[in-house]
Image (cartoon, rainbow, N blue to C red):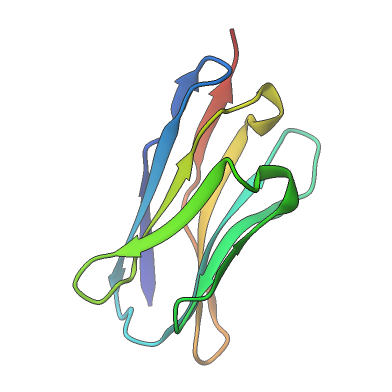
Length: 117
């Protein structure tokens, strides 16, 4: 079992920046992929950025050049989402996600990001 603890959400003005963090606890030894999803009111949850075992990472087209995913920690399982030049359309609940080697999936509780003047 893996528990994911997210932090770093909040309210920011357009053009501002935030950094989200996700720290796993429990048996995080066999993580295959880690990522960030977001869900705006009335919309489907969508992938924002992901990083897989070996270090390959990618981000969704609408945030490319503004959002950056990275990992850190002793076993490189803490992940971050650096969000720059935030826009009102980035407003959503952001969820950390991890996929294990046995295909089990774990989600964080979500952290609200609000971009508003």
